[in-house]
Amino acid sequence: MKNKVSEKRRHVVAWINKAEWDQVREYLYSKDTALQKNALHRISAWKARYANSTPVAMDCTADLVRCQVLDRCGKLDTHDLVLLYGAALVRFTNLITERQQGKVARPLRTLAGNLNIPEWIIDLRHDVTHRKLPTLKQCRKGCEVVLEWLQQEYWSRQLGGGPSEDWESDEEVDQKRKEEELIARQKEMDAYKTGRELLISYEQEQYVVYGQLHDKKDKNSWPDPLADMSWILGEIKQFSVESSDLLIDVLLEDGFLIPTPEQLLLIGCDTSENVCFSPAQPQLPQGFLRFWLPLLHELNFPSFIHLFLEKLFAELKLLSAEPNKHRVCYVSAWISEVMLCNSTRCDYHYETKVQKKARTKERIFVNRIQFRWQQLLSACLDAPCASTSHLLSLILEDMEHPLPLETQQRLLQLCTIYTREEHSDPDSEYTQQPIYTLESLHEKLERSKRHGRSSALEFERSNSSQEKKSSGVDAEKAKILRGSSWQVCSDKVLWRNYPLGKVPGQSDDPSCFLLDSYTPMTVLDQPVEMEGSTKHKMSAPPAGTKTAEGSLWSNGDLEKLKCGLQLF
Image (cartoon, rainbow, N blue to C red; front, side, top):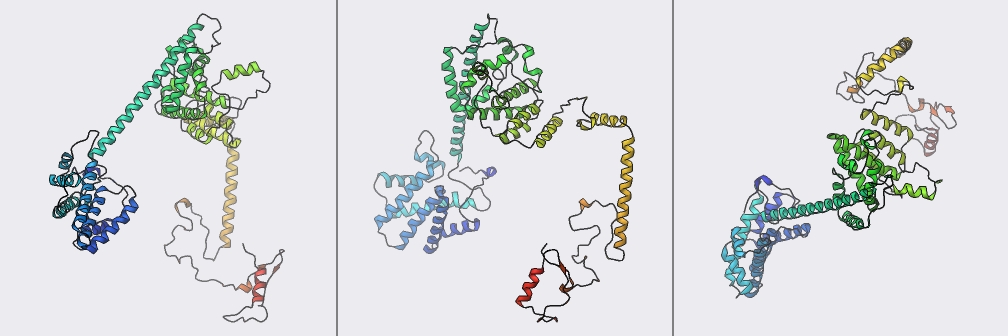
């Protein structure tokens, strides 16, 4: 068999360590029946841990050793032993060669030859299955040969850092997995081709609809889809149920939801209506939105809209690494359009039925959808672009549980700084304008100089008075601590470099803070604050107590002391 030294695989095993594995291996191939029974019990425990994934070689070894144990006990006759050995040998050959079979069945002798299994073992298996049963001597010899083969090809390979040969993951298994991956990839390619063809058919039908408007003066009133388009919309809707992820990927390609200049001209969108001229507040061209509304009306179920938004933000994040202004603008515009359809900022209580019908006709969906707001907020912040501030404001204003107003303002300000959007407001104070670049910092300094030096002088005075005040406080503290073991530190020390509870120059001896001289205070001398803010100083112990070493207190005295204590 082929050893894969460079591809050592890690997997969970049922034994504790290699020592347990080595012990079971030695017991299995021992001539002592008691040791073999012990090894079989251990393998039974391993099989219980493995459930249905016990290695085939281990299972076959246990079956053959169990035959030897029953043979040596002398309780079975010759015919029973032949049947027992025969079943174990048949099971071995079938299980070991099973993984070698491909889609086309191959002879068992060929498979056994590839695994270096003697050919007469296959003949012995054939006799047990189809012909006259072999003799007990032949069965015993076959069992010994097969156990020796398992010892060399399986058990010994686990020791000495050698590769762990898994009978369930050989070359044929890898080849089978590659074939399955190839089939899955081919199915995905076929589905992608189908989705693309459906969308192209939809566009062609919509161009026919636009042809009907070519001679009309009012091109703003886009007509209803043709009757022939119903089957295309049905096919796309069915395709979205099966592969909505793939359908959205195709929609986000150039030529579909991201139009080419030729497509915009073909459906009559003017350059002044183009979204790319206003990236800070993106808006889809009205004609381009109407072009895709019939399809989006069919796909406006919540799961599709959720996935659509996730894909749009993911595409926006990819575009932040490789900027493409055209794609960024249209992806941002589609996000904005979906968010505005879900927005509740506007009040439409006073509109007429005609106005409501006209408004809802231009929307992708009408009923509000419960978005995953935290996820959308994170996705928006992970994809910074020129439209991030606009999209972020839409999310913050429409959240079910909005953030605090101050948090929203700070988040928008940080977003503006990060995306380098400088909004000049001459009426605002220069101190309230955020600093974007080094030039902004220089400009702010120049403005501060023009506003006079009085503020600087006042700042210096306040600093000097603060320094004088702090120096006076330090001097007072030093006077109080004069003669004691503690001193006020006047040096400029970077305290962040020292852990809590440690000072500069402190030794590692834990007794460095112990004082040489101190005045003890007994419990009786300490003031006790009673309830009601009345203080009493106990000068003598209660009656009936001993004040000498080992003094005793009665229960009543202890209760009085507890009532007078204040915990803090």
